[in-house]
Image (cartoon, rainbow over all chains, first blue to last red; front, top):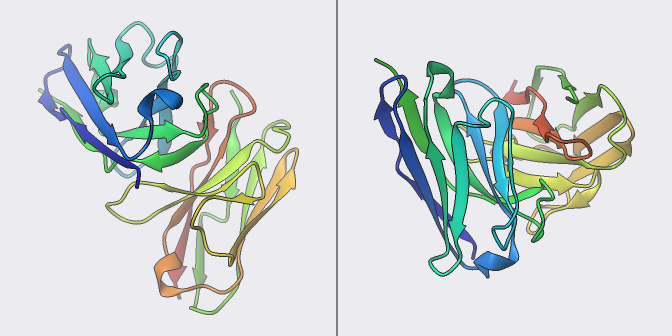
Length: 121
Length: 107
């Protein structure tokens, strides 16, 4: 059974930084692209970032490009999202989502339970 | 960026009834459209991918259809656990985008 467990969320001040992690199990982690998708309180879903199975290619939404960095450690089955220069509109539940293929196909077939990031002073 | 417009915003139905949800794309996304279900306090769950393919473990009462700009998710007979918010999502054009959601509530 695929399991994705996010951690690292919390309260951070505007301009601050935070690092999210997602620990994966139940599948061969390196065989799949991974994504971060976020959901602001009471709002819809927004794709944030993707990384291919081998980690060589990364992709970002315009809203986070230059501020967020996605990475993965396939030896530890872990996905990360390093977030800098955080703004109030980054406040959201951040979900780790597994892609259907090794490339970034953007079809999210398994999701973690999410970790809440709150940016406020 | 592709805009997905879902209708209606809210659908009020009784258990056992048929639910028909619509998703319209601002331009053709071919068949690269997925549907997700989200219950309160839970993560989304993939129901349908590539317009009409049920994801692993999804009951047969869920079906998807359409191509191009107009898509439909049908729940043939609503079970109590089906009352939730449903999102469509396209992956034909980068960036992948989601619709704003349709809430299926108990009448």
